[in-house]
Image (cartoon, rainbow, N blue to C red):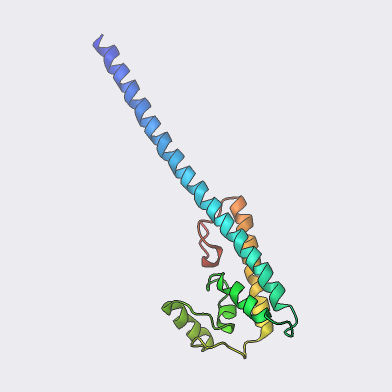
Length: 153
């Protein structure tokens, strides 16, 4: 009888350990799915803002309010994604970002009127390509962070 009790106890202990491992794995997968969902929503939002920003930038400059709308749209996107566009509109940024911007562009927060418009347009196209790549990677679970930070696994 004692041997059966020991075997039964070991079986219960093994089942408890397996159940705990399964619960931990399920929690990890749920957290990963939540992060992927949030990242997908962020990518979709940023793609939408980029599309609207490009519409504004490609409009004739004679339209009133085009620059104000474009500046507002650019402010919705992270500096890391479109630094030249941020600099061209003189958007306020954190101290570190301002220092990076100054190092890259020589801009101290004053709008850059000498930024090449083609450079801004190309930056926006590159940002769209980056976000589209991130969207594709999301479908196969390769991305663990924002696409402009290069945080692929």
